[in-house]
Length: 215
Ligand code: BEZ
Image (cartoon, rainbow, N blue to C red):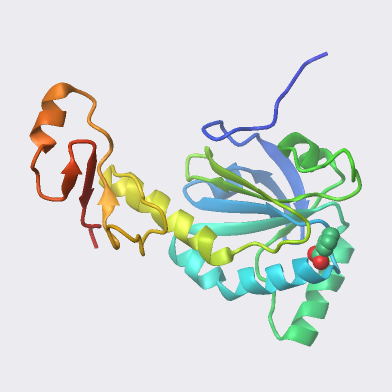
C-alpha cells in the first residue's frame, strides 16, 4: 500500500479539487501568486467557530492588503455552510466573503485534519501557503481554544518582511522586548562574515545582530 504523509513545512501543498461555497476550486493553483490561509474548524453552528469566522471576516481586508486569501474547511455540506453564514450575517451583521470547503473527509484526511478519536469532525488547524504553493506554517489548536487572528496577520507580515529583507523575525515582533520592530540578521555562514559583525552597530555579539525593518 502506498504510504503518504501529510504535507510538512517546506512541502508543496498537495493539488486537490475542492467543493466550496464559491464553487469548485483546484488548490493550490486557485491562489497562485497569492498567499493563502486554509483553516479548518470542527463544525458549523458551534460557538467558538462562530467567533472565529466573525474575527476572520473582520480582518479580511487586512489579509487582502497583504496579498493573502482565506479559505475555511469543515466536514459539513455546502448547504450547512450557507445556512450558518446566513445566520452570522442576520444575527452578527457580518457577511462571510471568503470560500468555505465542504469536505467529505478526503481533503481533511490528506491534510491530517481528522483526529482518530473524533473521526466525524475536523480539528482546528491552519495551513499558511505562499504564492508558489509551498506550505510555510502549520498550526494546530485544541477544540476549546479559538485562534488569535492578529497572530496570523503578524505571521504573514513576518514572512513577507523576512523574504524581502533576507532576515529572520524576533519574538513578539514588531514589539520585541529587546529590539522593538527591528529584525534579525541570519547567523553568519563563515568566519569572515562572523568577524565583520564583531563590534558592528546593532550586534550584541557576532551571532546576534539586529537591523531596522525597511519600511
Ligand atoms: C466550538 O466551536 O464551539 C467547539 C467545537 C468543537 C468542540 C468544542 C467547541
